[in-house]
Amino acid sequence: MVVRSLPGSTLAGQRILVTGAAGFIGSHLSERLLAEGAEVVGVDGFTDFYPAAIKRANLALAREHDAFALHRIDLADGDLDGLLDDVDAVVHLAAQAGVRGSFGEGFAMYVRNTVLATQRLLEAAAGRGLERFVYASSSSVYGTADRFPTAEGTDRRPVSPYGITKATTEDLASVYHQTRAVPTVGLRYFTVYGPRQRPDMAFSRFFARIAAGEKVPVYGTGRQIRDFTYVEDIVAGTVAAIEHGVPGRVYNLGGGTPVALSDAIEMIGEVVGRPVLIERRDPPMGEAARTGSDCTLAARELGWRPTFTLREGLEAQHAWLSEQAGAARSQVGLAA
Ligand code: NAD
Image 1 (cartoon, rainbow, N blue to C red):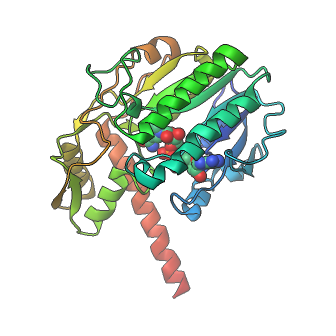
Image 2 (image 1 turned 60 degrees about the vertical axis):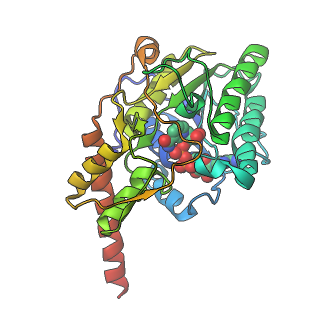
């Protein structure tokens, strides 16, 4: 994304703590906040869910700013003393993401990096007089929702342990809002994609396979429906939540035009300009058959609407991947 100063931002001069700053969404958000004239205190534990080198690269642009500072802290057991000094708002994105790994032994890591880390940060935030404590939840809390598009009041019925840790994140936030006046604002992100998307996520894997002429593994029928959301829209919604989110509320942030996975794969093939070969796999565990966001509340209270079509977002992700591949090739050329 382009980093430039945006005139008239209400965030100019604010000191904002971003956890998970080196991650996919956190790095984009940090750049945007810096562009708005905010001071960003980035926190990341650089967990080994995917390579630290990718996370360091994610932060390359943010680190060019004098107003950016990075703290390598593990929120689950690190020292949080002083971290929130003079901070106006917190955006808590650090967590153990991903649905499939949350079953089995992997769950312990989810409890540690999502539940425990969030409780410790909320505890540190209590009594600080923060303007907002915005945190990432997920469409995964809905699981098998009985209504589409799904609004925030719909019962949460997670179908994965990951979804449970996000529902618990919301519940912890609610407790600290009610008992310790932490101004928590939750955001249920719906499948986010775009440049720097995590390597474990579907589109990242699809792009890589198609570019290499390999088969794309599709779990189940491919007719599972997802409300894909472009990262720049997610960042805009998160910024709007820092400015206008009503403490105690949870908002959906979704792209608003759900599509079947197999149709998205076909579109990726068109964007890359190569045929797509599908390899069927067993249906996945823990994935909802369908997600679809009703973002009426975010439109009304945050003034937010998604603006990117899936095609535009996929083209941007492809352009970024091509740039990365070009840079990697020239590195090899220089080394040879
Ligand atoms: P990501 O894995 O790229 O970023 C998360 C970052 O948090 C990582 O850099 C990791 O090192 C850090 N982290 C994890 N545990 C930590 C700990 N104990 N202490 C300090 N740092 C820690 O993930 P992302 O895709 O950018 O997701 C960001 C947030 O949005 C997460 O909370 C995720 O659950 C949520 N979310 C993401 C999506 C999506 O589609 N990407 C959808 C819904 C919700």
